[in-house]
Length: 349
Image (cartoon, rainbow, N blue to C red; front, side, top):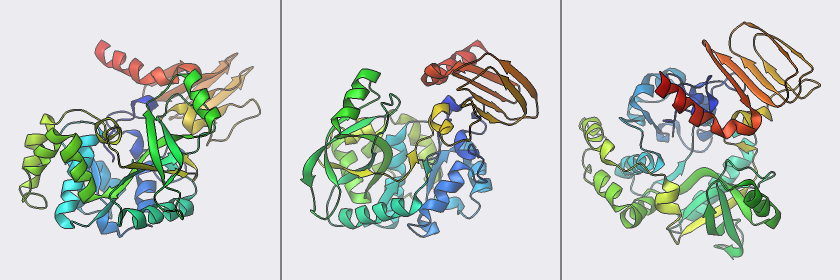
């Protein structure tokens, strides 16, 4: 999934080039390139599909030049993850009705790729035999209010030799007090937003729980993989409701399971989430780019995309990011509000 605009990473991430197309961590690969390479360890490259917005087709081709044009599925408008995954599922099911699928966001960081691949292959073995939906859960280590949480049943595993657990509840982005309770209880996980199922099982789930979206994409049978596919998608996509697969299917289904995982995951959803992966000075400041001098300042993130001069004195706990004549100065405690702030900026323009 590569259609988001990454507004919480403004001003580096903008509509013209969202964060999945950026080398945010300075490792020599953009996030989408890392994701594509990682998935190529699991399945043949010809079996990897990117779902993105029409406007990012050329960026996908430029950054993942191994991929076929037919494997870039373009959405004419943004409609959240449920229509995105339905499009991919119907397309893949038309190619192979017994296909196993992994749905992976294009902008996540995974540092232990060997463990990630091992877990995916273990789950693939299970879903080839069991008609279930599986999501990956991450062991939480802080009371983060920006993630969804999954509660699971410790003793309820499908097979005694797997780590797959029955999901009990989903909670979307709790307040800090509730997040602390989740952390202390020990039976909650962060929802990584990485899903596994067969194409048949997920399509059946749409038929049961999101019938309107199912009917839309079902009406395209016979057009997937043909010259009529693009016109069909452009015609029907905007009629889909804007809803996530979490709300639309996972929270309703009785057949959702979670795999508690630990493979160095971060969704890189905020400046704070990447801060832990970048080097610091002696005052715990993250500094990148430009000619930047900090005095009497600590616990800041200061990133300048261009070679501009910057002097900061007496600042504690702030995010300062400059890119292409745009400047963000925001208290770290308010980083979840950056998306809202950018909406105000657009309306003012």
